[in-house]
Image 1 (cartoon, rainbow over the protein chains, first blue to last red):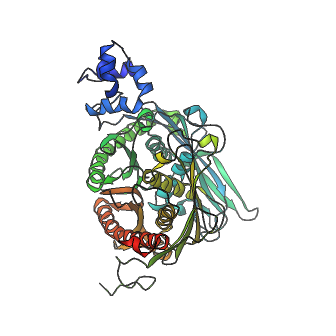
Image 2 (cartoon, each protein chain N blue to C red):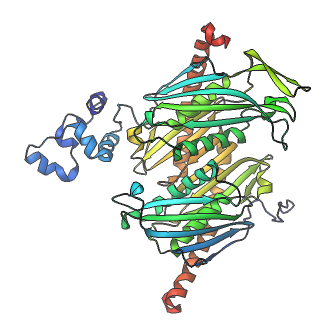
Image 3 (tube, each protein chain N blue to C red):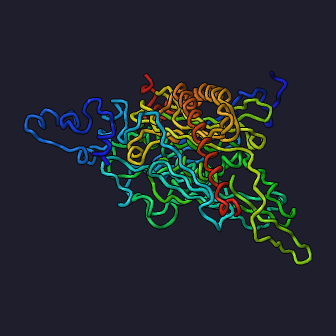
Length: 322
Length: 230
């Protein structure tokens, strides 16, 4: 990673190749006088935070991006042909796949016409060495919960449109989001995948038979789900409580003092559906506002990527038919 | 302005419910506090620094554990989100480097929930850490506000008011830094609404900080006599 990264960086102060520039301050004099050399790879392993600090102080990041540059979102719709809707999202090394499965369930007595959307993020051990087999990690649970709160509070899908027969049968949409490769900023990738998959979801025609009290569904998925808005998540990391970086990678995430996630409206960047900043270093008011402004620019790019994915999906007849 | 009466007889949208705390309620824990904000009330106990599970041990600092228990029912992912926010907020304020290879456990039990339970719990946790004598860098305090369907900003809403919320916002500020430590916002809101929520919560936190101050002063007086005041 590091040699390539150093090569990609526009070497403002000989980042990478020059040995003395890469050593930690305290070691510099001694290292230089003894002709001791430390290659960037080793330096990153020994002093990971200092490694990133050196890059950021030069206005560039270890993977060659400027501070405010996001990774391009690559979206493809319909990779899972058996699901009612699906999407795969890549942000750099981060890969997330999301499938929507519709099942028939009984509504709650208090809300006889309301269906359910159940988002669930899975961070399996295969995606990163930080996750172990067993019950879902705290991050997976809390991100799932936050997505659920955002979806519900912004009324993304009117739950009454999921009604099949009031009081008897409604659709429940299980939105399963699986991380295949954790390259940082899983929250953004997961929410983009969720938004794309829900837009792509088609439900079968369902009929309720009162005499047998059963629901029969057609074999083809024909009815598009009416999704009221498109959510665009945008995440920033804050390094040393002062330097804001957009779309952090997994290596950077481990050394951030805090992260900041906005959930914006795709059409109107003035409107937001969520902000999440959990602990860490304090973020002043003007930084919150400045990040929101940067997030709006990012939202435009994500919307374009979504539109591109939809066009590509329409050209492929096998995907469009599902 | 005073024409609007809120669901619990408060006159103003920017009026907080009366809040108070009582400390050292539990004999077995190192610190305990009950924080009440209107009809929301949370009991918090702190143990530590104490022995840490080997798996959670950190070589250079203490491990902070937060357990959040709702008033009724099994714990769900909602409680896990609260635990994470409270833990990540307090981890930044506790001087964890003073207690390497040990654990500080914060247990929060909701007694009654009438809105703003996360900020109430966080305030209880901060005071319980003070009560336990754990060294802190700053005192984080939380406040909740909401914007209703007509666009009116209501500070410290009750559960009844939250049902009609278009957006809800929880902010945490401390007494030394000039920014938000934590923020959870959901619902549908504009940037102007967001910044006015920030400003409202920022000024409201001063009152909570004032309570923190008088609570700590009371603790010092009890433990070291009245002359400690000077």
